[in-house]
Length: 198
Image 1 (cartoon, rainbow, N blue to C red):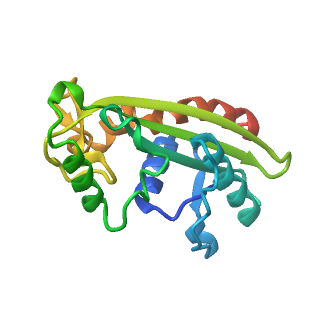
Image 2 (image 1 turned 90 degrees about the vertical axis):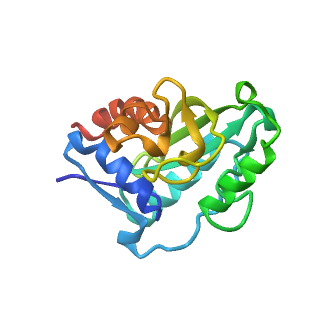
């Protein structure tokens, strides 16, 4: 079975990626498989740059075609905050960051709580040293309180009016069909098929 690397140590993300790519008959490895436990410095000024930095580092560490991703949540009422800094805008856990977002929006009515997830995937080929970039988005509103246990990050406060649920209340299968990562991965899959003759 052909191998690729997903340049992350986040096992929640890794599980999502493996499920989404399961039909390609690939063995998806992570940085843990190469005993690489450092945080890759996200020095880019865009999601695209950060995803490319991770993908390239993964390719250098493993010698494999490597995926890198960068995601963010942009809240309209907060002028796009936390955006690029979604993962690290405050110390603590995902729950702590969710509470901070809710606190910032405590006086904002439901019709003004629009939000979007942005997901960018980069594929780096160490043989050609070329990088391909793919982007997906998911729109919703910020819930009034966290709901659901399935998912990670901001999923418990990311409400989808169409489904009347937060992302954390969706099944894995449903989430993987509509997520920002899925939208980016659908585009990336076609590139991967050609690159790896799948």
